[in-house]
Length: 190
Image 1: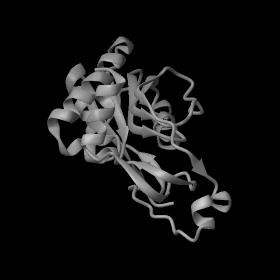
Image 2: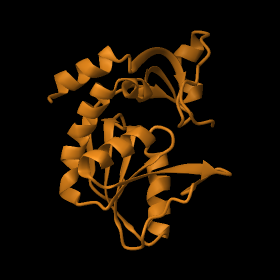
Image 3: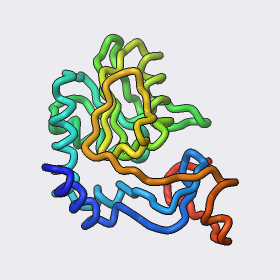
Image 4: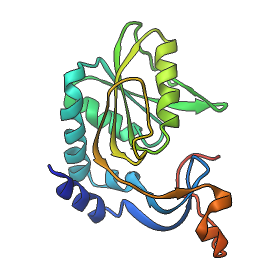
C-alpha cells in the first residue's frame, strides 16, 4: 500500500480527531490520532499491520512486544504475520513490566511496536524492560510516526506513515488562550 491508501484507511476508520487535546506527553494539540479505532475493523487492521510486518521481517525477531494499550493488538497482528511470539508490557505501580506469566528468554531478538509514536516514551520504557531481561531490541515499528523526526530509539525505527501534527506546551497553547479546555482521549493518565 502507498501513503494515500493508508491515509484513506485511517480517515475511513475515524483515526484522526480534531479539537483540543491533552497528549500523554503533557503537550496540547488541535489534532489527535486515535489508532484504537483502526483495530475495530479486522480487515483494515490486518492490512495495515501487514505493511508494518513486511518492513520488520528483515530484523528476524523472536518476539514482538508492544506497550499496553496501544501496542497490544498491533503486537499480536504483526507477530501473527511474522509467525513469532506476541507479548505486551503494562504498567504496574507506574513501571512497565511483563505480567500474566509472560517471559522473554535471555538473548532473544525483540521488536517493539506501538500504534503511534509521538515522544517515544512508552516505547523507550519497553526497550529498557527488554534490555534489563538480557535481550536486545533489534528494531522499533509503528503505524504512525508523529515525532517529527525526534524519536530516537538507538535502533532502526520503521513506520508506515509519517504525520506532522502541531503540538504546544500548555502555557503556549493558542487553544487555551482562546478559552478552550483540552480533552484527554488517550489511555494513559499523566
